[in-house]
Image (cartoon, rainbow, N blue to C red; front, top):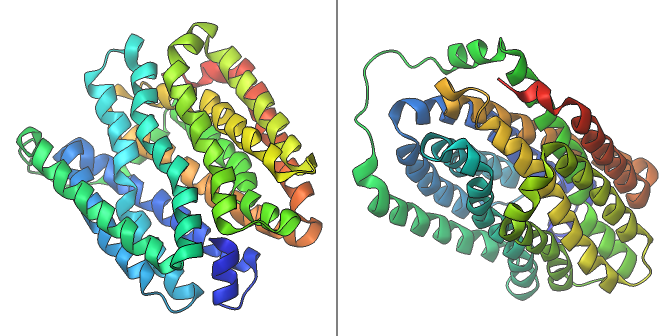
Length: 358
């Protein structure tokens, strides 16, 4: 949507990308509260409430009148939408044995990936057909429906609330005194800084380079989600490779496909490249998610919240940094720089992943 938002609000794509940054910053902050909330009041309860409030915030996005108001509504939306993934992984960590956990988390994340698969297509079609506001209306209604279903299906599993003071900052301070948690946070920042710093601008790059419609851009970017879904289906084949091989393979393959996208002369070749990007990212990301689920078993929701906060901060900083890089050097050099950083991270993890052990 970035090019259309920039046109509607009479600003540049780089300036409009602040909307993405606002969402990521709010997500990063909110998840730090939701992790301890989930540990104390029940992960499924916090998810259900958060999803419902995210639906209302999405409807507010549809009513935005400028970039600032849209960024503010997205900020609120992120506060509530940050609950499902982090607390979902923590819930899996509570109920699934470690030897089965990576494959289970991959299947769980397949739901999120499916959303990322149809999200760009959904946004592109609605932007072309009925305007970007309609996307937020439909998204809001889907959130509200999801909240209602979650309450109906999980209400009986919600634990009784406990007495005592709620001190999320003290919980996180205690966790950050652990070396493995600090390394997890740094890796979380790095993975999304480099990957999504480059990926967010692919749509605008394709628009500028090939003059594609928003629907066509959505179709191209949907390949990322398809690649992630294929990874989730094949994860049991890759787990035997071992964590070290998986992360270095993901980093190098990610760099290769980013480079190919900015080098091809026909936009249709970008479709298999975005497919490869999704596959490459989840080779790295799913491995780190599994490490995050075991780094602090005594406060699993809070530890995963710290990790989720880290990758949200990484995304926010990556998009902001790449926005500056795009304005100074252009899309292709900025995207390639981010891709090189992602490859370097995979190689670094190859030799340092043991640092994430509790």
